[in-house]
Image (cartoon, rainbow, N blue to C red; front, side, top):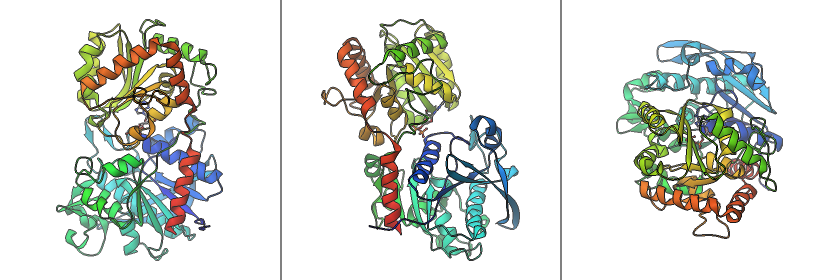
Length: 489
Ligand code: ADP
């Protein structure tokens, strides 16, 4: 039996319940909690955003200041940081404080623009992580890094410019949650890293066509690389999905492996979910109908038991297939259904949704914003869930949908392909509806199929219950990560 790492540090730019924008935060919360419960010692570290301060009461945690104050060089400047911490659900989380960088409304971007100093902000965070490891004096054996905001850490450790630490002997696992966001910045920023030398060409892991690419640095520099579903692990080695890094990803000594995310079953459980007007379970779905009625009325639509309800909860960005919905919308609204959408993101999509609200007030309700509790009520109240993503590394909402007896309608890419089975192709095991291409026609075809399924009550209930019975828990996922950590050391 391979031995277990003594201590692991999970490094990410966001985590629930502290601050979140998407699926990474769900993983950053659930995976360390699950591993700690399994007896693995794993801590977490992230930036101290304003939202972390604000969320203390609601999130049930209290920030404490540690004795560690660190001096972080950023080019010719030195910035001081204090480290805060809290312990929640068995996991110790460290927070890197820097008001200049993290005391802002949002994590990465305002609706119409990204913060212009994101390179500085996350370079600072990564340096502070390395400096804290050194200051703690208790070495971590494995650092679990996540996405571009942590991609430079292997290089910073290797160069050992923050004292002795373990001199770069930590093993690193780098998890790609979304290859489309790479952290690409002009090479003129190199001096801020304080790495020795002045030329980007000295750092082939970091260099990408003359620029700094933090995602590439993570992929090329880490001991091992994984991503969040087996299909996405395959896809990103191709030109279509590789976002320019397919070559690097194809030539790694250890091929990228895919581990599907799980569901935090404490937060997402229709039997106990406090956000729902009624709870329900696999064997007794009557509460779900009450959730539907309450949701339809909350959205200002008229509840009709015999009208299927489709919902979508999403960051409103190109990846998520809003364009396909837009192209299908006219015909979609001609069908006997209702549609409620919750999301925020690119301004153009906000405009579309405001327009749809005006055009189809009887059948469509678009809600702009981020609302965790409403997202629970929507998962519970819906009959079907839209995820027509162009690409989807793992996707969480289809997993929540399965658990809540809501049938996912998906474009089978990445994790959507790995977790949803088509009812037409596989009537005995089907749990959802799969588009046969990334087109409005394919989406409409699935919707029509969904409406027909909705009216075949017995079959509809069976498909729902099959989804609810699918194992989407973190226990399986955490075990797979544990095997990877063991392999690393
Ligand atoms: P991604 O990480 O690409 O955004 P995922 O499906 O992996 O996509 O995870 C999205 C997570 O964020 C889910 O938990 C989803 O419910 C949540 N989410 C996205 N947008 C909103 C919103 N507007 N309000 C509430 N929750 C949202």
